[in-house]
Amino acid sequence: MASLAETMERSGPAASPPEPGAVAGVHVEPAIDPDGDRLSVVATVDRSGRLVSIETGVTDPDLAALTPADVRLIAVDIPLRVPNDRGRRDIERMLAWCDVPAFPASRQRLGQLHGGLRGPGVEEALSGRGPVVESFPDLLLRQLVWERHPRRATIADLGDYRAAFAAARPPRYRPKARGRATPSGLVHAASLLGDSIDLGGWRPAADPDDWQAIRDAARLDALALAATADRAIRRGPAHSLVLESAAEGPYLLPADALFRERAALNLARLRRADAVSLREAPLPHERF
Image 1: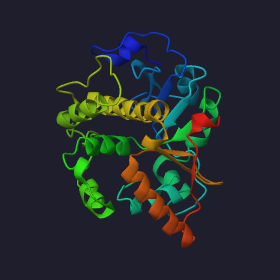
Image 2 (image 1 turned 120 degrees about the vertical axis):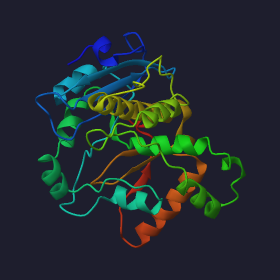
Image 3 (image 1 turned 120 degrees about the horizontal axis):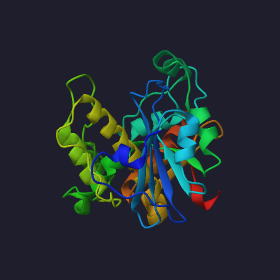
Image 4 (image 1 turned 30 degrees about the vertical axis):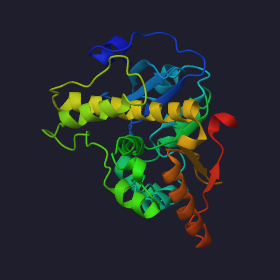
């Protein structure tokens, strides 16, 4: 595991114990890389919304050791429960109706791409630190783009909202191949996250090589997850949505009133068609 100073590599928050009420965001690489080239990241944010640590690890015990005890909420970006052998889960089906693309997780697909499911082990390792929920970093960034949208205050109905929200795209910042680093996307994503949490001086490299860009992208994923959890804790249910079923979830989604309304309509439609079994649930910190 890298120390905070080694992980930051640029100016950032000093390592300090998080205050009570902290939250954590955990970007998990779907397959453990024993060489440590692709690292998982744990970002911890205190109850005032300030980043206090961002550190890297490889194994599930690493991630548990880097997550403070008794955090109020831990958001991760790996499928925790995948009951379906093929196709996609209910959450991905519902998000598609909200014009939110999400990776279609199935046991077969995760086995083919990553050699199996890492999520259950991660959930077990982290569950002793606090309640664990699955979330989607891109959705938080997209919501933050939307909250900067000049038309947001003048939207009259869900039809207008659907068209405007569809055009609010999150920045692309994850390198897809060698030589494909996107510094402008990394900087844009960090700027958006600065609207939500205090990054404490952390910033991505301005001119990264491939591996630096990959590692900064992983840190941005962890920061987006921590910001999603922080949003749920500090801003309350009007700004977040939790969905779950007996087989899936809980999933924590950043939201505003319009997204909540659209999600409720689509969820009702899909439930009437017996296409999903998801239900809205209380925020995790209210019931754990």
